[in-house]
Amino acid sequence: MELLGWVGITGGLQTPDVQVSGTTQTGVLKITGGADVAEPFEVSGADISQGAVVVIDEENPGQLKLSQQAYDTRVAGIISGANGVQPGLTLATPTWSKAVRTSP
Image (tube, rainbow, N blue to C red):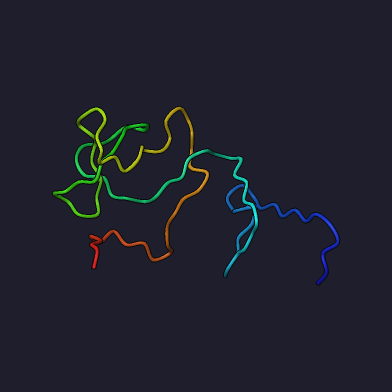
């Protein structure tokens, strides 16, 4: 198939606009629907609000917890969704497990 111009693909309300099964390669990826990059980590402790700064939880490997101090050098990220900013990109694998993940 030869493409001679711009191609747009639009899904329904509950389906992605474009879904690719396999490898996708692009020179530039422009994300316009959100500004955040998210990863699916477990969070230990009480409910943590959107916009909260989280650090690696040494007592629970593979989990994050609320930062307890200013200028914490262990910061891992910020909980997505503050002021309505939703993830523009989510980093995950189809086999993401809730099991504890440790380094080899």
